[in-house]
Length: 258
Ligand code: NAD
Image (tube, rainbow, N blue to C red; front, side):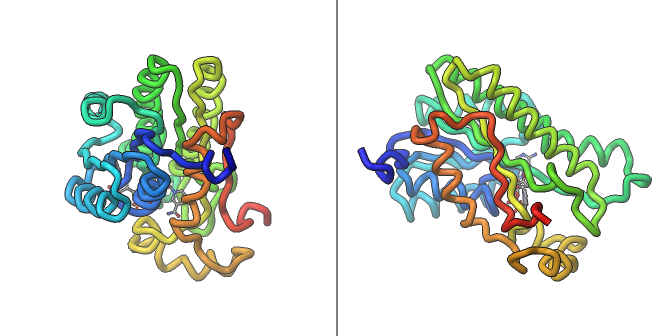
């Protein structure tokens, strides 16, 4: 079998959290184009439904839209149950839902801190744990978490210590799960994107005005596009990456090199 065939995900069953839009949506459509059935999990049910219908129309694959808040264990458990009911198994779990809050450290309330840590780190743990249990029972699977280049550098000029700390946690969580589950055939990797043009950056009143500053610092002088993360997602989801586990893939147009 040639490498392009090996990259295909025919008949695999996948889900993406934060799949309604942005990076999650672009990853979901890539997995479906490669042959997987995909569930889009999000707190924004309406957008998830429209995106799932669009992906089904464009790719001919089965899709599902599920409302779940990744910080709530009961939501995560019932989302896993619904996916198993519709798809029968889970081969690929993309734990991607995340938010950013830009607040100076000395002004941050415990509530603000917990909000970011709960979605970005605890949400990834709850989702990966629930998917991992299913995959261990099945005999294998691939979990991919969305970290960030913010796990590696301190972004400036915006203050975002909770985000940076949460994403650094995602990388070490990824490595820990990869080691624990290596012999159970459950691979766990993460991606660390640089600045990507999505609602998180383009629609944020605090971040949007900073884009010119970031682009001036960036070696490529531009934001990344969410579709530029699709190929790594397909690679990590499928069997051609069988020896890849516990890795973090920085895709940032060399931003963290300088
Ligand atoms: P986005 O805001 O466009 O999309 C995030 C999605 O997550 C939304 O659909 C939102 O409804 C959903 N979501 C938020 N909280 C949720 C929760 N508790 N449960 C379930 N769904 C929830 O953001 P994006 O830019 O596509 O970011 C996706 C991921 O990529 C995030 O983890 C983010 O931190 C990370 N990331 C983004 C960038 C960037 O520059 N855009 C860079 C590096 C990493």
